[in-house]
Amino acid sequence: MDLADLYRDVIVDHNRRPRNRGPLPSASHRAEGNNPLCGDRLRVYVDMKDDVIRDLRFEGTGCAISTASASLMSEAVKGRSRAEATALFAAVHRMLTGDVGATDTELGKLAALGGVREFPARVKCASLCWHTLNAALADVARPVTTE
Ligand code: ZN
Image (cartoon, rainbow, N blue to C red; front, top):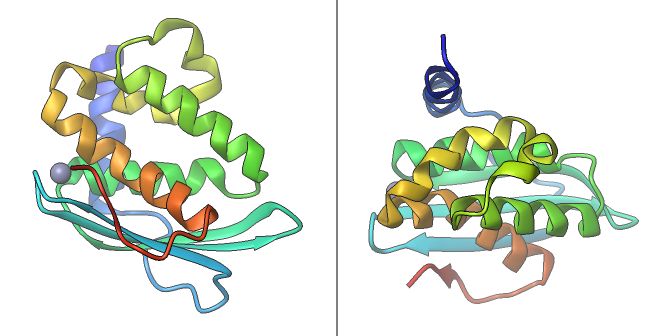
């Protein structure tokens, strides 16, 4: 199995069995995000205490990439500080916009989404959850959109 197959399997698995999907009654932060280009709609809930993301869940409907990305993000940022989550978003953004390589170790399983950068329209599917998380942490009331 080569790396491309492994990455494909990670995305298929997280789309079929999304982790941390559902409501989060204890959420201290929440936001909505829309990607009109594809029709992806997400709500991200964050339970944050002392600047640490104790829990994160998401709801919504979207394509396989947006669902897998939200699932992978939820696993990646749980237990992290706000600053660590922001740094991870920056690393994901670099990966999705072309500058991969050195950031792979830091990204862990999130690297599975790297292949998306060859399909510019899908980059918005993969980054929607991160923009929505950002809005949640910044207490932005208005839904964010990729357009
Ligand atoms: Zn999509």
